[in-house]
Length: 412
Image 1 (tube, helix red, strand yellow):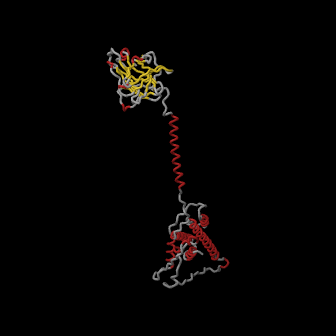
Image 2 (cartoon, rainbow, N blue to C red):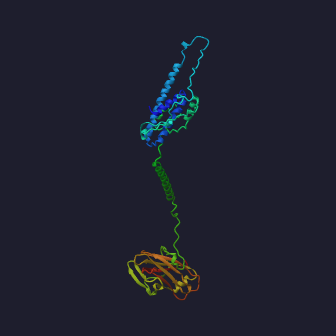
Image 3 (cartoon, rainbow, N blue to C red):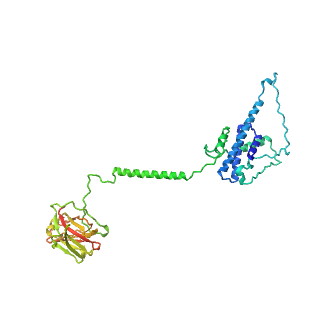
């Protein structure tokens, strides 16, 4: 018989074993003693712990069955037989036999009693460490009555009840716990080690958060695309590209204008490649008239970005007179000569009307019509012609420009 089983039986002998609550407190004290012994021996193996708890619960179950059988037998023996009761009018007087108490301080009064605190668990847990059973002895000078000793033991057995975990038939010790619960005793559930929450729960939570965020972003994207929030409303054409006369600012960047859809009879031709007489190249610029399947054009190749790389194209005085005192539009039909994008500039020198500042444009290998507006507040009509100054490459990298025509739209 194990040490805990012996201690349980001896504790029942010293207490009111007919009371179910008293027995339940003794059983719970045995469980607490087992847990304390396992912690003291530093037992960490859950299998060993579960085996020890199971063995204790089986022992408690067997002891409880014996106690109940004893109580049933005692009840049958003590029941009076109605055929043996005397037929006299006076009930017999029952006297309790006087029990001789041993003298205080005698050897019988100082007998050693086992306690739960010194019991070492059996089985694999006990093999981890040699059992050390400390026998507590009471002092000879202490005088304690038997009833007081029993009350003190019952009070000591009222240890804090350990919280029992939820029922799980697959956890260690579950069978023993259910077996003991059939006794109907309060606090009869053994402790079962709780399983710690692993990394799987945290990973599942992170995946859930990521899925919610992805769903939110996808819903927002679908809403923007379905409502057409980023699209231009139909029936509202883009405004035509225009540029006003302004001084050149090297840090302001380049400005590229779209092509005019077509030229009506209101447009006046200021220059055509078929009449090269009005072209005056600078010292560091080369001009050639090219005629092929693409049409006639003036090819300008500037070697400098200053005035020496400009080409001067004459503007007749009659055209200047039509620009006086109003806003007009100039259009240059151009194309990159070498198939690479190039940046060219246009300046005005219109005699008494003044200038129009310097304008920069970017042109590629497709033929385009570059437009810009000029405004002259002066109404004085000039007597002589003016000039348009064109530089094919403001970066001085030798980029070429093909000039097909220069046109004027007066008053618009």
